[in-house]
Length: 339
Ligand SMILES: *Cc1c(COP(=O)(O)O)cnc(C)c1O
Image (tube, protein in one colour):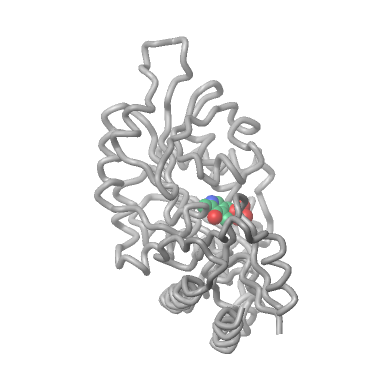
């Protein structure tokens, strides 16, 4: 038995999801004639109380389109030093939009309204890039699945409005934050100008992300998606998976969170481990004692059928997900106990 905890993207469609895909009604989505895609987009726009939603093949493309919608070349986005848009989208911010990132030295991928204000370049000081956007991530990926304090997000909204900045949420794992905190999608819809959500992570779909926003910005989103090469044809098969996941895989995220906590508790008891980051959702990040080699530690687990990934600086990551079963969980706990 292989226990793959590298990411919550390693899941395969369930039987129910495959059935939904096979029976999906489809059409050419470039002409906006795919009924399943249209239904998914409408469902998400309604869910967040926003005007429009647009399906993208990946989360990176949805975020990159958002950056483009909010900025002009030469401008600057404020984000955390851990941000996915900065670290893991191939330098897309500069490649696609010609913008730079002002990195905030936050805590676990999150930062304060005060830090945000201090990061805004004065608009009349033409020597500096013009600040035009604030981008936050919830939950934070590199920050270990941490959930933002909603009050701080509201303060950032004020900073954005007072300074005429856009406000984008990279919500690749927003579902996890909603389940962990009991917050509602509409609260986020009221706060942000654009929100990207992934269907291919905790929800267990084979592909897909959706960008949600109000029509003033979203009216250009379909053109940007076309430019980025993301106009697809009978992609309703993927939308059917998304609709199925929204109906069946949302509430169960609580199970992933519970398992992640239990893994963390077991790791804390291990002598090789220096520190486990607080676990709020489905991501477990832990640091090995300095005399333990992380590659060797990973290989040792890999020989026992457990796959995890390194995060650099002697840190390792495990992510729980839909395909990480109760049986796998008991086996992993046993292995960690005797490691
Ligand atoms: C995974 C992820 C994305 C999007 O990733 P894709 O692989 O392009 O779908 C965006 N933001 C965060 C925080 C992520 O974890």
